[in-house]
Amino acid sequence: MKKDVKKFLEFNGKVIYFVAADGQYWIALKPICEALGVAWKYQHERLKKDKILGQLSREIGMVAADGKLREMTSLPEFAIYGWIFKLESNAEGLEDYQWECYKILYEHFHGTIGGRKDLLKQKAQAEAERDAALNTLDAEQALKLQRANKKLNAIAGELRKLDQQLLAEERDLFNS
Image (cartoon, rainbow, N blue to C red):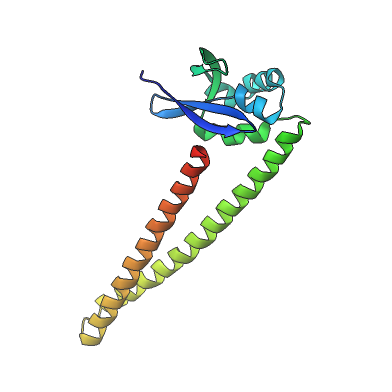
C-alpha cells in the first residue's frame, strides 16, 4: 500500500494533513479538533460509537505536529464533512465553522441544482425539437434540426463547464 503524506489545509493556525492510500484520501481527525478548539477525547469516543463513522475510521500513519510519523484516527475524505456536523462542543471555533459549512452547502446545492435543472430543461426541449424535425426531413425541418443540434452542443458544453467549475472549487477548498 503506497501512502503519500501531503498538506491538507491550514486552519486556525494548525496544519491538517491527509494521506492518499488505497485509492482514497484519509484525513486525521485530532488536528481538526485541535484547530476548532474541540476536545478530541470526547469526539473520539463518540466516533467509535457511531454506527457509520465508527466503521469507516482507521488508524493511518500521519505526520504529527512534532514532525514524527504517528498512527492517527482518520476518516476517508467523503465522510469528513458529515463528521464535522456531528461534533458537539461549546467551542466558539466549532460553531463558527459549522455556520460557514451550512452556508457553503446551501450555496453549492442551491446554485448547482438550480443551474443544472435549467440546463437539463433546455436540453430536453432541444431534444424534442430535434426529434420532431427528424420525422419530417424537408428543407425547413433540416434547418430546425441543425439549430436543435447546435443548442444541444451548447448546453452540453455549459454542463461540462459547470461540472469542471464545481470540481475546481472543491479542489480549491482543499488546496488553500
